[in-house]
Length: 224
Image (cartoon, rainbow, N blue to C red):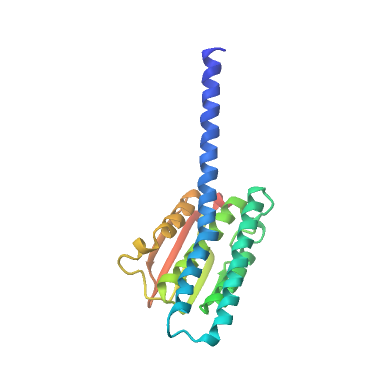
């Protein structure tokens, strides 16, 4: 075997290991966003049942809620497996899927939701872009439920400029107080990573008159 051939083999091994690492990182991110965050929320909510003042007559409704959440986790695991097998393409109906996500979030939390989709939003986006945007929104909603104290939230899918698209999540909660980023931890980091994967950036700023506005700005060409 020549030195050149050995070099080629080494490059091939390095590339394969790099691909495997990216797959593992993506899988870890998916499990966090779609499984771990729901289970974490369930644990937090279960603490309420253990409190002395929790009304016994509300227990059956709470159990039903946890059953629904468990079904959602199982459904997400099945979807992850499907996506690994390239059986799902969110890019074909992203706005519809986001609307379903908001409907489930409102039913589960009582926080009012609204989706606004610009007429200029791309008719179709790539599967990778759609999955990353969808997971980003899931994490944003989870943070709103756990940290914001919001009564309502609005999601915008819109054109920021001719060459940029924006995904905005605006809530009317207590705002992005000092130290909140540390409490959100991996969730905020995961959202930033997803925006970066699409060649964009994530911005978090106060909303008017109060609340928080989270915006992912992404080059339009990276969605198609």
